[in-house]
Length: 402
Image 1 (cartoon, rainbow, N blue to C red):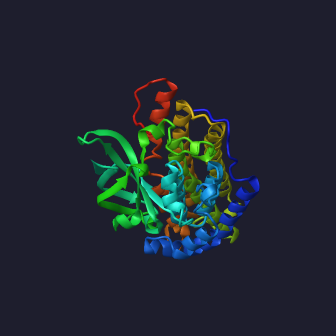
Image 2 (image 1 turned 120 degrees about the vertical axis):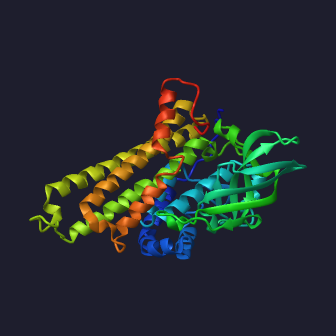
Image 3 (image 1 turned 90 degrees about the horizontal axis):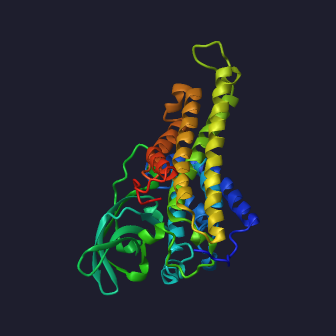
């Protein structure tokens, strides 16, 4: 696909303003992080603040009141939010990427979501854990979708479904856009980390979905989207690279949050137990580990932003990202998660066993990162396998999601 006309994305000035807004919210998110975890739901004060700052409209089309921000800006903002609260950043990530998915649908569907509510938010689950029945004008869907992050704060959901013909034969995999009022939420999210994301289970019982609110995931993976607005660069971005890479943004932010906690602790002049060091900051072991952690965070961020720039630049040119590059973005996503975990591991070692005291935010940051970085699409081992196959020109792959 080649398109010569391209609507400009968010300007550098407006992108900078959005990032400044995100940075300004970090203290509030940090203050509310414990209650967000305890309530297993992002604090309403956080949701209101993000909404007021326009940070749930990063990927909403500009013609519908959004910022239409590029993927790099998206990731810079969500990684910054994670410095304050991992769960809040994760919810902001998932809502914004699902809002982006709605931008791929026909304009009729987009108008239904945002035409009367500029602040409508969308959650989603790609896995097609449902059954479908063909009827006139669309499909009737019944199913259960687990791990629906952000569902407690959304008005719509994009949910994976099998697309079937009149005989009941599956002919495609799709994503159905369904109002939350037609779904129920089952409280199932009891986990060690990312507790505040409210990633519960969505349930549909014989819900009718009109054809214009069903998008082919199979075609989407190849870069064919039903949106009529072919001049909007953001909605030409490669599907799977976007869906995967955005999950890595909070990983870098959580590692940086750990760095913030440890450097603040070191500045207070605490010592190292059972040594002669009265100030841990004077120990070469501390200095070396801190430097290594900082380098790992920088490495993760560099890979994150390289991949984001690739997504944005291919979309701006109106050319669909080639297969090997898409596979590399999957690899980058897993690599960012691994390096971020390694950085946080070093920071925990600097802080010592006190890191795991309930009063220490470092233990929550660690649990959030350990949980979020295990998302199936992030899996570094699978990413390495599929990228290696792509490099070797092996056509048989381990997943269609590349």
